[in-house]
Length: 377
Image 1 (cartoon, rainbow, N blue to C red):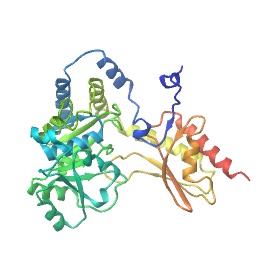
Image 2 (image 1 turned 180 degrees about the vertical axis):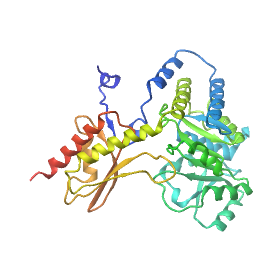
Image 3 (image 1 turned 60 degrees about the horizontal axis):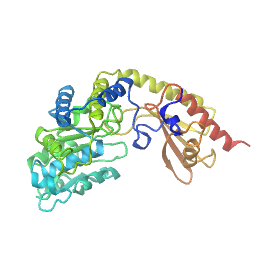
Image 4 (image 1 turned 60 degrees about the vertical axis):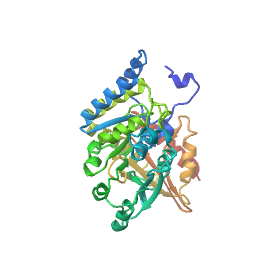
């Protein structure tokens, strides 16, 4: 039986790259998809629905308050707006113009990344700091500083002032701490961990491992700042978040997805993912020049197993960039994650948490075809 994408003439893919936005985030469970469909058949007062489910989510997660956003990036924008404009109507209306009130966000040098553009979208500016705590405290005392921004991700590596230390210092000067934890699940403890360490607002994606709609996110934290997030959000017309709408269908689906995620057997998932990766590793073992390691990402979250494939592409062709391009042209397009490539060494990553049962066999076929075709003779 053909699916909706095949009817539209769009090929479905094998996603071994993880819950990437470019590849659709994640696949919703039948129960979540059904909730979304049912919600589409009725009218509802959206602010009432949103607030009611936010209150329930806060109880489920055992956090002070929750604001539903249209994605993690939107959650960062709303968090920045909340720190700059608070609940003041004139400031809310003025964003992203932030002249006359604090708009600088301090961020560790090692946490600079392309996603922190969201701070600038809200009207904020970014200034970096390093591990010098005395200089950090001096920066906190500047009146133009609106808050402190951390990005916890596998691609933000290096030393920085711990959240617990920065949080204690920032509270002395009433500067809130915002955490981009978009992909920092599992473990489940991270829903509360960063708040307990001193953060004031923590942002998670709803469309990655929670497996809600891709256009959904959660901001958790201090009640007054969460209320400021709401006031800076849709449906308020004169707000930075007016265009970041999330529908009644997506709100309901996210709620159901979070219920499922909190009650899910995560240990069984880890076992299944490792089994798929071990299958791939064993099947690729005839390629003697290929180094294969089972790993977990850097950092406090996103603890999902993956395979790292490293090889000298002067000896074993193709290179990482050539391989990833060839796999997307396979009869069933296969997406793995490009890692790095220099004049000698290539590496790619293969994630299992976005694979369906049996996908691992197709991945092996595609990889073996590419390597053997390039290295015959």
